[in-house]
Image (cartoon, rainbow, N blue to C red; front, side):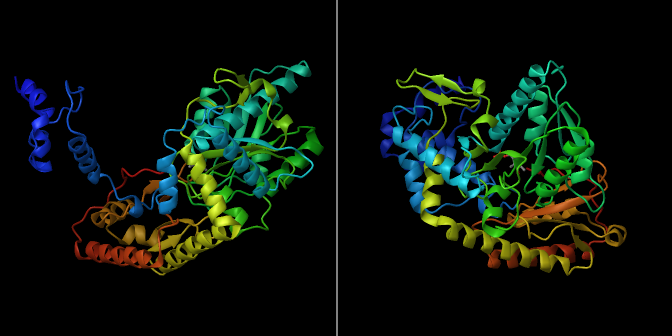
Amino acid sequence: MHKKKIIKTMGDISETLTPSFARAAMEMNVPKYEMPESEMLPETAYYLVHDELMLDGNARLNLATFVGTWMEPEADRLMAETLAKNLADKDEYPQTAEIEGRCVNMIARLWNSPDDEEAVGTSTIGSSEAAMLGGMALLKRWRQRREAEGKAAGRPNMVMGINVQVCWEKFCVYWDVEPRFVPMEEGRYHLGAEEAAGLCDENTIAVLAIMGSTFDGSYEPVQEIGAALDRLQEEKGLDIPIHVDGASGGFIAPFLQPELEWDFRVPRVQSINASGHKYGLVYPGVGWIIWRTKEALPEELVFKVNYLGGQMPTFSLNFSRPGSQVVAQYYNFLRLGKEGYRRIHQASQNVALYLSGKLAQYEQLELMTDGSDIPVFAFRMTEAAKKSTNYTVFDMSERLRDRGWQVPAYTFPKNCDHVAALRIVVKEGFNRDLADMLLSDFQRHMEWFKAHPEHKPRKSGHSFRH
Ligand SMILES: *Cc1c(COP(=O)(O)O)cnc(C)c1O
């Protein structure tokens, strides 16, 4: 009965003269779990959805995410103009396909792809899809090599730090690869070179090295891992490739640490992924993967489709994908150039170093990293403060929400699960002035806890580490 009434009035054309917020749908129960029977005015639907989304966090105060939350208005406009383009229709949208190819070339050079080797690569929906593609190529190559040698190829493994992003755990489960995790130790919060080499055997498809651990923003020592694997090859004859997960660092290191050799300059590095939508400075929906050579990407994995006219090679998990993110990536490359990227990331790093330096001055806190790799740092309570205060990092994370700051608190994995930390990701759009406001809120909350001795510290939280 009630339902019928909504159905009738929501689509009533006579409503066009009614003021926006006096329309029937604004006063009634909007159906949420069953599609409405009839139409409503576009403007009414717009406000209903728009207003509901006001309850989401403010993206610019989201210091938890690595993902782009700001782009220039010109980029917004280009994206709006290209929303209807399907990246999969390479024959219909040849210029979008051409632009994707240009981006692949620019990124391969940025990562020092050797001139005498022909790199190949593709855009993806993000680093997670890129990880699946990179992992699949490594798995296939290992299998082909084992079969050619007449050896068993049934029990592949991949060696990685326990700090991997969840996409690598997914890769291992989806493709039946045994993940060999190197645990952390107090003072080493990511993969160590010797520890990685120590877990390798003839069934190891690759060692994964992360440029920008999500736990603390630190770089893993790619060059040292390469050297440890060189020694392993000399001693045991095992030739193990490296894949670099540069989800965030892939677009930081080339600009802020150009001397650091983590990319194709390290001969064992076969493939690298990065998220265009993290420090590539695009909104969510674009990642990249580059292989060192054509041989690094077994051709069995590349499909040639002709449904759309023309023969187009594709290597991806999905087919249709928005073209606008790739267009926006190209816009940034043209607009900013290397110098523009360097200046934006340097500004972020300066803010990260400033903020971590200020927080380190509190005797209750200690830094785990300071933001000098990627502009991301993690910090925790000192052992003494854990005993003498009535709050934890989880309390702090929760209270910072009172003005909209989103700063995640989380525990570390094996063998550091006694560590609970807060993490701050600084990126384009977060400036020194905002950092000072965050600091003063931090101070205010510390004073609040002091003034409320009855407060019971929280032992865990509900915030989320990306
Ligand atoms: C963010 C991240 C991923 C996942 O990337 P998406 O682009 O979000 O799919 C993988 N690895 C690392 C190190 C990351 O930081």
